[in-house]
Image: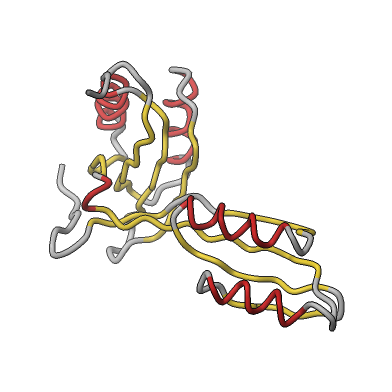
Length: 172
């Protein structure tokens, strides 16, 4: 049985008004209370003037409830939903610059294709590969790419949506 006091990885989807300073207000809420943000992604939604923040945080059940209550107190926050792993599609983006010469470029491209990653740039001594997926897939992809020599790496935070017909329309 899961102990509710134990921190677990949680994804919060937060609809906010697209106003200056909203990211600062949200991150300050986490910082003041000592919660560590794993990732925060802000993006436009299908509705003009509304952004979706996808927040990944390690926290206990109790702390998630407290975070949610505090977020609701911010005037710019329209809706907060904790996304359930079973009904959520979540993905991150990774760009990796890998050593690739004429002698091993084919191997690098073949290895990338196994992960459904795609080459987005080629130079005489390297390739840049774009991969998307869940954290475990991206870790496995990176493990394979390290065999060729990773020069640079950047990874986004997760973005997430509910599966199926269920929508996340703003209401307050």
